[in-house]
Image (cartoon, rainbow, N blue to C red; front, side, top):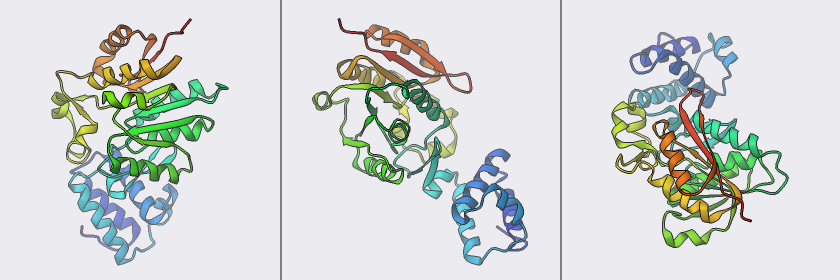
Length: 293
């Protein structure tokens, strides 16, 4: 990184030029905003009006370290150790997935559909990762009792930190609900939500290096021979643990909207709907348990 001067404008110009062979222009702009916002508390306006101010050597060293990691396709969120989701801040590392905009859409749907309900809802998030779904639901549905599960302690530690960071009370459980002996350990819920692994192994060839090289594969990929394995198990769990007329929400692979509908019908759910994301891809499934008379 050969900078003409230590003026902020020169540093940013050089930073962008160095990244041009690696990332598209719009992504570089976002990376610049995130990097300078994180390290120097710069706003979008600061990036424009502080062009002639000078950076110290220690500050330029930080920028160089970020640049070197970006050239290895390490996601900026992992470099900074932070990301934003639904307007909230989350700590993350390579043990957990980087929250996606599509998942924000799912959370937004759940909040809007349930915020006017008067009862104190019991919500379960299966496979919580960074805790982004559970924490955001609790933040926006404050009267709800929210529980989140995952199978590894190091993952739950991140989620617990994020709950504290966002000042919410979420119950985190180290439990694998896919293990039959654990299924009786949880009580009934009004809402169960999950964003399980749903990318088929065969789809790896279409994915970018920043995902393949850094994000946890166990949280992403599923065997092509049984792509709905997690949905099947979670649906079976939901049948036993959702209250009558309880709601089940999933984020899904765009390829399997029709198959998901058939699977949920077969398991006895009703009011099954598949919703498209902002890119018009089948991305979310919602269904309800039947009323008991």
